[in-house]
Length: 275
Image 1 (tube, rainbow, N blue to C red):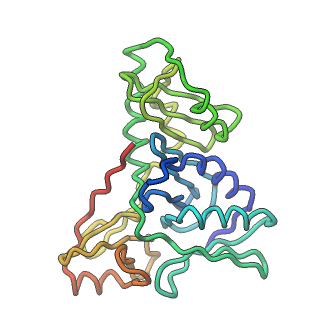
Image 2 (cartoon, rainbow, N blue to C red):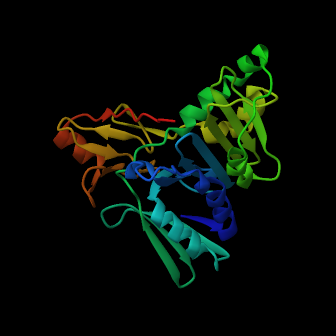
């Protein structure tokens, strides 16, 4: 369980939710808002058609990743309006995992969308952040941006920096406790990868754990020998049994050891991030 101020969670939702895929026929598994909790930060992550946006706020909690369907995220945002401070619990006591928000007698419960496609935001931003030094050496002139593109990044904050990737690849966006990427575009002044990545070293670090000699990643999808997909929802605490959630059938949550015994070894599923 973590304790967090309502305006802090509202702020990271407001910074990222405008980036949803605007296409009406976008796959439902991509139309999600991901809440990604580490021991130091709670992140909100949204992938759009050409953009990726991540905002964070400091917390003290465990490690879990919870994609929420957009309708549930919007309902959560409305519920936060009258709140000041509340507790947030990743609840796995009854079948499919849920996020439980509690403010005194008021409670709001949101199901975790285990079927959602994984947003590999750490790999994308970490890899692209290493490209900006090379872009700076190549140089390049200014390229015009559409006003709607600039408006899309405005919620990130009053001071926003744009980092060209060069070669028409796009640009990275940074602000205090915010990182993003937009494909196909260049801006005026390249920055250094140190400037972009170093303040986010802890956030870019993947959450993993070792079980029976195999390394598993929190938030990743795995497939068993029967072709069934499983989501690794959380990092178990000391002495806790790791669990997995079915990404194919609702309300199926089992101990990892049981799945391994019945369905053999789990193979990581490579989730492609189209941008």
